[in-house]
Length: 359
Image 1 (cartoon, rainbow, N blue to C red):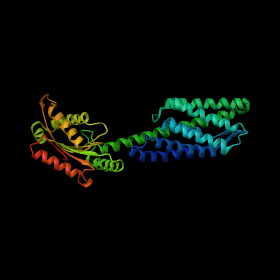
Image 2: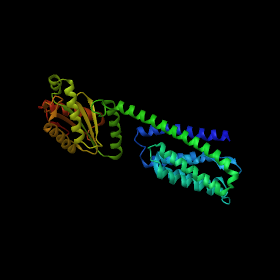
Image 3: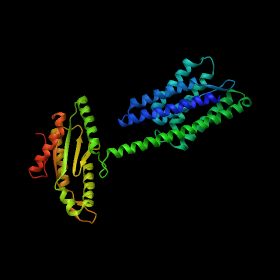
Image 4: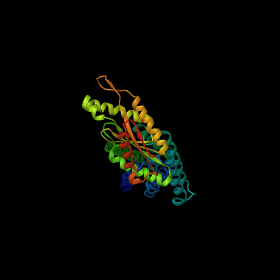
């Protein structure tokens, strides 16, 4: 029996670590909230549940034990009710048609247990929000339910010792699973924070120049696939060096922070804000043609011009920006940034506080 418990636990832990690796790869591509991903999670954990059923082991007489319910709990935790439902259905179908004879009542115990686990997990566990209290409550209800079923089906005196052993084994495995899930969750969050920090500008929180290339390639691919244009705005703060020279770099940082807030309020949440360095910024405006780009850029220019920037000592100053625009697919991929830079140069050469764009 100990060997069977170890086999079940090893299969669970190996599947969790392997699944966590896949999760990390998909999260980088922002796929973890898509329906097809939830269906995939449900299918994979359903397959895990079926594998666990193959490692069913007897405690005493006809009392058979496996850890399929944990596959359902993990599925609900990772993917919500959608994934949990797929996992539960796969386990039930396999239980009824591939494992045991329908003339026996044992398959129906497994079916009831799987359905009850799914319902309890959906009611108590929160998707991707692991709580020890909720996990322990779910585990306790499942144990009480299993003990009740076996006491009803079998003679209480004959199964008391076996049920005690079952409760201990199930509790230990359940608690170990919680610890593993918590550890993997913390590891994934730490990795996400480090990746986020590596892709962001330390001062403004915008994407940095290294991430800009990745986002630009993704946007090219989206436009090529869907035919929806996007525009590139290159924004430069006029005479920003004078701000640093006159008021100091701390004051310059304060202005940049307020300027970043103006950008956040001007552009949509789905637009990509990038700080290339110093006082130069780039915005990728999705679903935006050349005419719309000029209108958005002009709105940004006029908003900055009318905004009063406050320094730490209470003094106030005004700044202006020059903006260059280019649009894909109107402009070739390789020339998109170069064209926007050229328009920015013309705007500065013509007196600054202007918008240059595709005509």
